[in-house]
Image (cartoon, rainbow over all chains, first blue to last red; front, top):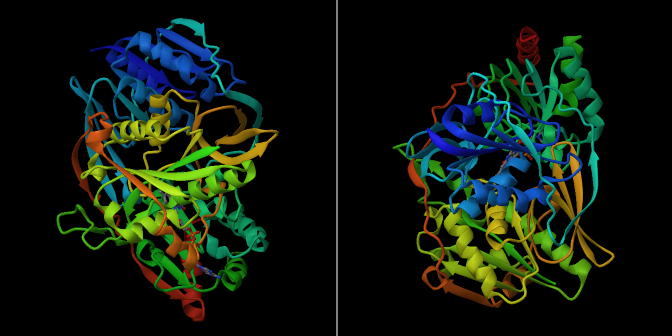
Length: 292
Length: 254
Ligand SMILES: Cc1cc2nc3c(=O)[nH]c(=O)nc-3n(C[C@H](O)[C@H](O)[C@H](O)COP(=O)(O)OP(=O)(O)OC[C@H]3O[C@@H](n4cnc5c(N)ncnc54)[C@H](O)[C@@H]3O)c2cc1C
């Protein structure tokens, strides 16, 4: 049994449940109104930013001296994890796929080299891990503790504005069928055709990282791969997707992989069940005709 | 303003193969600047130009690659005036704790650093942790996932995009910032810039000179995972029967 565990999480009860199972005393840091369930819950105002709370969270950790810190696998979780790892003089274990909490420390695995390899590593306590959904599944185990408020500020850093895009995440991670747009789609003019095809296939639309970040065809939370969404769909259809490992790793759990690519030598041909060698500009409308 | 861009030399991932024992074979891989650090460099150059009267320097912790003139040019041909480096023979085996503590020591040796800019994650390990750890060690304001840096009314403005939420910060003083790859497109250096980069100054300290913390991570193995076997059937759009067959298979997936 560990003495003190600190959890940073904004949604989901997995991390706090596991912390309660392995530790005598648990502390949760979260945004106001987001979560409860630990012996002590520190909340910061929802309209603030986690970046302004780093010093305040570090003060909580300095007093608590946790053996273990668990952070959710989001940008905010990663920020807190790195900052606290520096304070605790440990190396944070990022985006673990598996995590064992042992008497001596943490043992984890994670993907490296864009998913081409899996790294198994361990660290002694005090330890910090960044943990995504599904890694620490188990029984819900929540405590009714006291809530305290954090109202951190950081000298030299001023939050000028906050906006919520309201862009829906859709349900890409849980979708049964996915049509994925790669840079090879060529032009935003083809996007309505993608909508039509996705409609006919009853599929969600995802994309590659460059299609989101460089072409701006879709919001960033729509890209599939090691640094984006990991799919579990029955079917995946890639349109103008080259099939680099960093992307395809997100399709490893998919049922059938379909692709349309103009190059027979594209990497995706080896990663797909069925590849149509052709030009999306002509193949896309022709496929739509056939499916109607 | 003095801006330091932290970067990592990695093996070109397209030349890292799965060895016969399942471990990475880097025997024929060349060194490259980790791709997202190039985006960070360009962001730093743009910010420096906007601020005016500014300097951009590169900083890394690396091993023998520091003796490689091509690697030096690839880092310095995209604008920065000079490079600072901590030479550690086993640089790629150090964990982020050790690397961040060496970088902290090195940052403190350079005069009047205002901003440290890091790429969000390296092309090999992609931990997305180094900048956050460095910020914690320096005790400076720390931001990650910054997708835009601007200069307005005498202040550096940083836009942090986390899922659907966008936060805009004004930075007044020192900070450590990790930027996402969409912040800028890396520039393609000209022949002249590549030649000129060879003449730019490089200051190298040894890891012993800097001190720093030891790694705490024990790496048990790095191995290729089992591959999902796929059917790899190819159909051609130009062949009507093959196209028909592809569409039929697609239809049967509904
Ligand atoms: C650390 C790191 C993390 C990364 N994480 C991710 C990630 O999570 N997700 C991700 O997607 N990427 C990620 N990447 C990027 C990844 O390596 C690839 O660069 C990216 O997936 C390629 O996107 P793409 O296939 O859309 O574009 P491209 O590589 O440009 O491929 C376009 C393809 O379209 C084909 N094409 C072109 N025109 C046509 C046409 N008219 N008809 C048919 N086909 C055509 C081409 O033959 C080509 O194969 C990451 C990279 C790094 C370094």
